[in-house]
Image (cartoon, rainbow over the protein chains, first blue to last red):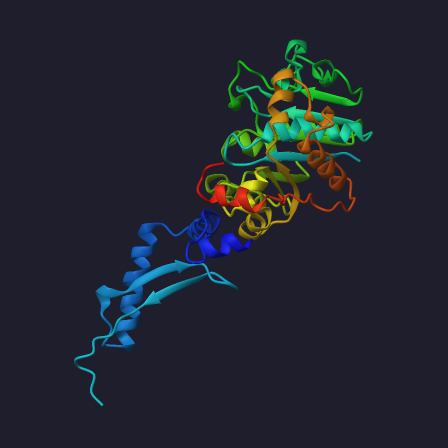
Length: 88
Length: 264
């Protein structure tokens, strides 16, 4: 990268960088081979298990995503908890 | 001992046939006895790329079904005495041949050749499976485009599932100027994404088209950059350590400026 490139492109991603990120994400999905049905089923079962241990969990709100990471890819589950009833 | 090497890609149009023809020629120029097989049954193409389309009498399906002996069907190259083509059938469909036929076919070649290169059809169905059935090694061709790289990744998975050993990668039609502008994936990035080891990178080169127009291998075109790339791949297949071509273009400040605004 030369001086002018740095000057004009500091903020903007190049199309090659965008291509790489998009490919890495799509390949995580391709490689894991989770169908949308399996994903939905997994979320349902996860909700059941979590509800047994964490009553505050919002069963309908679980988000499961596949992500590309630096050293490994991972399956990320976000489970929001209800705040109102938590007492100390 | 022969090495049976299938050249495949998943996506069509990335240069499998051109790679097979030029790699076969480069290997034969280095003194190896080579047969290239067109496994794309119904869509015969390797013959026209090699300029041998007028010499076909028998084809792969004739050999498999016993109408011709292998020796009768093999077509000798116009220039190189140790380079042969086994053409695909044009009027049959790809179900005329099964994986066991392909294994039996390449087994007939084990004694007389050093390399058998198989040009695979695009896709991941029967034709692809036939083309890898008899292979000892697999080379996957891709271009630095998202669609081709994605399909290459599918093929990597299928090749590994077929227990053919780790495939090696050829990155074809790379445009160095676009890479240096950050507008095309580099060889290193494609290798990182697919996580398989590269055996070659071939720059985009108009000489490929002009050679193919004439039915000649670009390996005979001394000015061509692609010629050097294919020769390097042939040497690496032979076990030599050959550094990858330096494809970084030295573009000036003004070129970069114009390139940035899409005016090149």
